[in-house]
Amino acid sequence: MDAQKNYTSARSLAARAKTARTAARKDTKNPLAVQRRAARTADKAARKGRSTARTDLKAARTQYPATLTQLAVRAHALHMVPAAGASYGLSTAADWAMWPGAVSVGLVAAHVGSLWLGRRSVTVTVDDGATDDERRLLERLDPSYWVEHASDRGLGGTVTGTPQLGQAGITCAVRLDGTWDVPKLAAMERQIRALLGCRTDLQLRIAEGDSGGWAVLLLGTRSAIDGASLLWTPERAGIGLDTATGEVVTLPHGRKLIAGTSGAGKSVLLRAILAPYALDPLTAVVYIDAKGEESGLWAHCAREAIDPEDIAEVVAELVAEMLARRDEMRARKIATWVATPERPRLVVLVDEGADLMSMDSKATPIIPGAEQIARQGRSRLVDLLWCTQKPTVGDGIPSQIIGNMSVRVTLQTAGQTETQQVMGKGWQDHM
Image 1 (cartoon, rainbow, N blue to C red):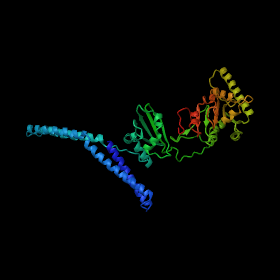
Image 2 (image 1 turned 135 degrees about the vertical axis):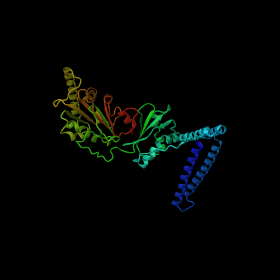
Image 3 (image 1 turned 60 degrees about the horizontal axis):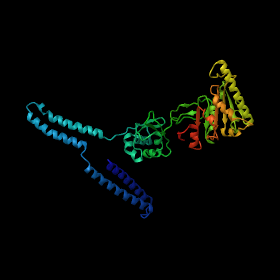
Image 4 (image 1 turned 90 degrees about the vertical axis):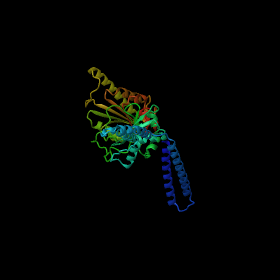
């Protein structure tokens, strides 16, 4: 098998070298040109390697022990001789006496047929709707191809399942032996791309499988929202569409952390998040704008605070309202505040968190109140939305705030450190 694999590889290399030499001849008519001489040398070396590999294959075939097929035929042939003799000696006018030879012939045919069935080449059936690129990926994800070539890429011990082509691309489960886990497989992304021959810009994700010892490869060859309009209007629900399923993406009520570098799209995202709240009669929006830019668009339907003194005053009022709701909830013996037009849900948006932290001082205490809102606001319907371009500890998100954020949205960040600060350890940028 090794000799056959080496010979196949040598033939492929020789074919490529021959093609390269032909191309070099077409590129220049000068027989002494550098590219022609290099291509000629590579072609000779490849042909020599193919010849050596062919010789090794012939030797391997000669030295290889008898195959199961050969042994089975020999054994049954030896059985047919005495069986035929017995049949002849016992034969009478009745034809049934020939049954030993017939049975032996049948056994030989059945044995050879079963061995052929086990050694047949596996063909991959590919969805007719697949593109040429998807067909190639599906064929290389097939277990027969993967197992044969995985070891060459350092992926021995992994076996693919049956790849599936869906709305968002190709999904394939991967079985991991005892030396592998999902993080280790994720670290081999380059080797996987080389094995599959992926395009450089093709999105490839490696995720946990449904059970231990399994991973999932996700190849983003398609998008479920191809052709769909992504223009947001106040009539549209949610903040966008899921590229894998095409379903509307909605964010639940509660505390939210939104991070992304400058220009990543936070302001546009916030408009889609805040608009339903601004239209809801049972919700009031408080816009704490440390940058003093975006809140101007919301002045007609939200309370805004820009200067440090105004921000400190608003935060103090929010804390006082939370304490008042706590006392009333205790008196009414309820665990969750019920919004009314007079005392609605309060959505407190902080933009930008890092600038807000720089405003905090003894004269204008802001962060302690914001942390109290993050810790105690959920049941009292006072939801904090913290937005920042710098999600690193001590620069963009106080620990008392990030630890209480139930919804976290990450846009493009400055790097993996910022991403993991928002989403937790183990997260990669592409996830």
